[in-house]
Length: 277
Ligand SMILES: Nc1ncnc2c1ncn2[C@@H]1O[C@H](COP(=O)(O)OP(=O)(O)OC[C@H]2O[C@@H]([n+]3cccc(C(=O)O)c3)[C@H](O)[C@@H]2O)[C@@H](O)[C@H]1O
Ligand SMILES: Nc1ncnc2c1ncn2[C@@H]1O[C@H](COP(=O)(O)OP(=O)(O)OP(=O)(O)O)[C@@H](O)[C@H]1O
Ligand SMILES: [Mg+2]
Image (cartoon, rainbow, N blue to C red; front, side, top):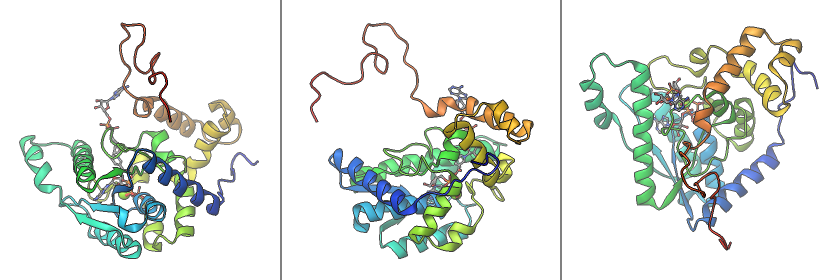
């Protein structure tokens, strides 16, 4: 392996089979047959929707578009392309009337805070629609975002199951092309679309093409930060990425519970005895 250019190519047929199987077994295991997904017009939710439609059948998948007034028209149009191509059920629920009173009551609120509020409002809508449709919420966070903590806690990160969380962003593109996600969606720059002109790569300060190989070395190949520097990665870049992974550990775990008793949930108690199947 050339550590500067590790091969992140995946077997798309195998990934497709495993991920659709995962969705089907995780949804039906809990007694459900349906799924609900926030469809933004971006590649992560498009791919998750393609996988869910294949796993459960398009009639069993509800795609919810939730534009804010500044969301781009492209995002809405791209989401519609996915809905039309797959034939999934769909709803459009604008979140502006829900979030605007809070934003207006907080004069001078930053775009950053407003963005997190929008992401959490979408979670509220999605979980409510999941109760109406009778489906589980499918997550859309990829491995790069989860490692870097690039999501709103309890917002877009909230879900019942996450089919694409072990795929780096560059691998998401590969599988999306193989599954027929429209090229306009695959080729455009990733954006949370939370404020005008936002793109992931601008906000993060590096590109997915640069960070995915480094994350692969640190996580999958278990390189130390120094070994990454020795392999040719710039020290400042390595430190920045390692710092983000560490700082955002809290987003990858459940809240710790203070221990008082002998059988504390999450530490000693995991499930009842004789749990069955
Ligand atoms: N160590 C710690 N242990 C436990 N909790 C901790 C904590 N440090 C902060 N916190 C809590 O977490 C909060 C900060 O986390 P959070 O509220 O998530 O917000 P934060 O991580 O500050 O910002 C979210 C980031 O994700 C990006 N994002 C959001 C939504 C969607 C997308 C997208 O790609 O579509 C991207 C967004 O642009 C921004 O860069 C703090 O206000 C605090 O309450
Ligand atoms: N306008 C929206 N309508 C519905 N869901 C949305 C909207 N904006 C964001 N979401 C939800 O939040 C998730 C996080 O957004 P994120 O930008 O990380 O993913 P994406 O838009 O699918 O892909 P990309 O990262 O390439 O833009 C989306 O996948 C989607 O589930
Ligand atoms: Mg997006």
